Length: 448
Image 1 (cartoon, helix red, strand yellow):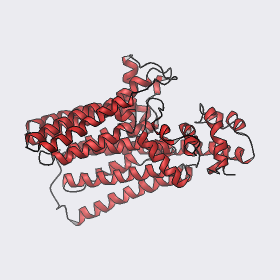
Image 2 (cartoon, one colour):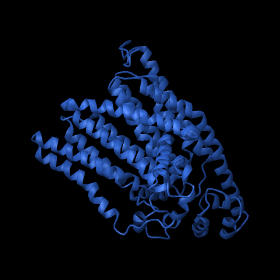
Image 3 (tube, rainbow, N blue to C red):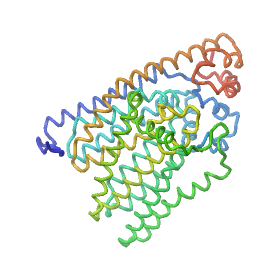
Image 4 (cartoon, rainbow, N blue to C red):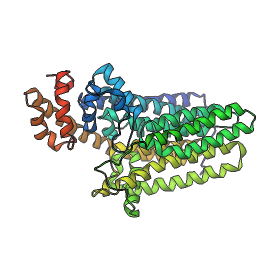
């Protein structure tokens, strides 16, 4: 059985036009499903860490220091600027939820079209993109607008992979500039983006050398400066940096680190397969090794070397994020499931995208089909996790809203149920400060 796509019927045939329409319909259905989840279960109120941001969002703290303020291991000026902007425009925490769905929907549609272009025709397996990006197993991102930080990471890291996939010596300058801008923005998303910076910056230096050798020395300098800029940002990032007080030291236990790292890789397909995460992680590692071997073989073709180096750099950077989570989270006492958190799924997802697109570009079909089938198998579980957890979160908010409407004080609300047994545990002091401000400005469930 051939590994390549057959060449008939013609790509402009009625069959392929119908398939393209079917794929767009799948994309639209999943987009509407994600939006329906946000509309039905999203609440105009802070979720978890967002309680900390209320004073800045409502003008009780200066904005510029808040944009740079450290949060756990992260400084996230770009996501915070986006959150500040949409909240000032809407006074609605759900705006961030809708924005995330819109960004993931646009990414899924673009990648479907790109796979079609690379292959020269559509394939039903391209449904992988909306099925894996827009399922409600992403509930933890969808109910917390501030998670736009992880959506930005997924979009920008995938953009770097696409640029690396399509770069040639002829378009090296334009691709290098685009990659440099994406990498700088990625660094501004937080600690996850910083992990990607060193390897991708090294690749951009390689691109700059290629441009220089082609005689465009001024253009090469531009690409080189864009390669160095994110590295310079690293130095600024760690000025005044401190380890979060409630975090343990990075773990050196190989088994613990490998376990959490494997969980993060596995959850890229969503929480629907979390019960067999070890099997999923093993499969993904095997597919990753096959993909790496396939890519490395292209090095012998001179015009492919920029692409090969870029793909390896992006994949290494994103893999490094999963490993960094393993090192940072394995030190917690409850390390055994620290990687099985819904919000981590978008941090490892670009690895799936680059794997899919590499095999499509080289005319191979079974790996893309396998990824689509895996996403489909995870879909029922992802849907179940999303519905159950989303309904619980909405129910907790309904209880808080009833208490707020009955006139309970902030202290009474945070000490009682459901707040004290919800996802807001640990946010009590922040909520005590935030609730009076939300009441004052008549925001969401506190408007009454």
